[in-house]
Length: 104
Image (cartoon, rainbow, N blue to C red; front, side, top):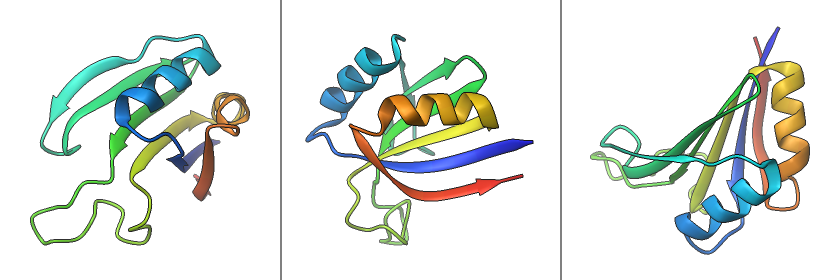
């Protein structure tokens, strides 16, 4: 079974959130550029969980990428095996809060 989490990073900038996440999980996040993710974003693999850190950018329709959470400036997506996602989430709880959780 797999799990997906959406977290709000509580840092004041994308770079600050990246540094805090890297320190918490002991992993370097790679910088990427994509219009789909709103420009610059960071990605990494955490022992079976995929992590994406991005801004909650305004899309072409004028809505934020996560319209249900317009007040969340920085988003962390975790997706993968339940154990790996839960491990990563436990390391990030001091830096973020859960916005959405689902299993599939």
